[in-house]
Length: 187
Image (tube, rainbow, N blue to C red; front, side, top):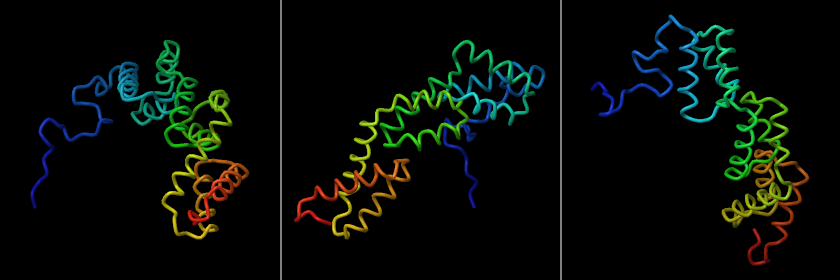
């Protein structure tokens, strides 16, 4: 059996591991280690304070040092859970068609403050949410030709439920779209 070598130009390490000789390897200054960990993680993408706390805890950074570094990063604007929540809601609603309930659950899992979650969700327009549900149903209906209407309705309801849409909205949208089909287009 041949040993696998990393491709040329690749180290074979995951991006979450610090490179050898990195200040993170120096156990002498935990504050410097914490700063480097946070900066490296924030370089990839925006992160919540909770995500950074978890990363620091995994690297055995003392809690008081972690809190100080995170407070400073928050103070200078490198960590902003409110802005993170707003951007998350906007991109996930537009890109994946998620409803308020699913967006709130995702943000809670990421450790975003409930106040920031509510503030971000307040920006979701109910008409935009309904339009997203209609678009999802229409897209999914294209692949459901030949199915009995009750089977299509059940599958469409399930899809909308998984995306966090309330049952009343899902029922109204599915009924309207199924009733809107011409007889020759019926499922």
